[in-house]
Amino acid sequence: MTANPPSKPSSQEQPVFRHELYPYRGDAHFLSGTLGYIHEALEGGEAVVVAVPPDKASLLRDELADEQDVTFVDTTTLGSNPGRLVGAWVAWMKERGAGDRPVRGIGETAWREARSAAHLSELRYHEWLLNRAFARSSAWSMLCPYDDADEDQSALQSLSRCHPLIRHDGHHVPNEGYLTADEYPFEVLNPPCDPFQELSYTHGDLSAIRSKVSQCASDAGVPEDRLRKLAVAVTEIATNSIRHGGGSGTLRTWTQDSTFLCEFRDAGYIPDVMVGRTRPATDQIGGRGLWLAHQLCDLVEIRSTPDQGTTVRLHTDVPRHS
Image 1 (spheres, rainbow, N blue to C red):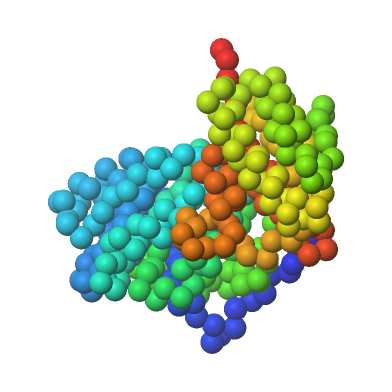
Image 2: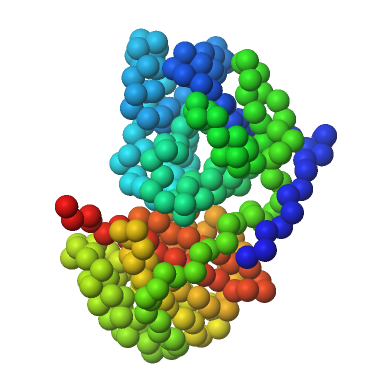
């Protein structure tokens, strides 16, 4: 898909939600920046939520002496899908911000543990979506440490485009490279790997869709328990596709790098970039299908534009056999 050119923030444009990128090198540099951020919060009566890799969490715990206003959370319980992270942060911030208390988050993504280029792309998209999720949340702010030890400036530049602010030497400054465009410049989806299976569908074809995906996934080595979860996700996405995508679409399935993928294409358009990222309210109309897909699949990729329609890819990891 064609990426929209990034727009530059004006001198008067200041985000309500303070979202800072903190590039660091080495443990000492990590500690100096994050501890400074935490102590600023505690001195101002703010609570802190920390979600960093275990080795970094251990470093901070040793320095904080069981500070009661600092809560450590474990993102590994969420699984590998970045699509679950926004909802988790919303819940963590609300819990710690009871009574309108300001909350600061520290979230370091395990970038080097990304399983694929698609996973890495979705991790970056999650960082950009945090600005949307907390756009009107002046009581919340977040620091995102990034280990720049490998000196990969292209990776750092890509990530910086998702953060309105950069932190250096205990202070944040506006990031001139931040993308303020309404539409995130998605990376183009690679075509399916050969051989792939294809099925055109329309009203009344849900059973055929489920059967096709189940057979292909089973042939690819997806375990029985994952087949059941995938069947639920497929039913939800296919139903949405038929109902909102013009009544018909195309299903494709294939296996790539120990991952089973099924892709739904239709003529519909999803204008809400946040749909499926947070748990739907009991009285909410719509949004449940994509939320369920995020909970049941290892990765969900969505590309949707008014002129090209919508593509939804569901990823399910296939166990490697020695």
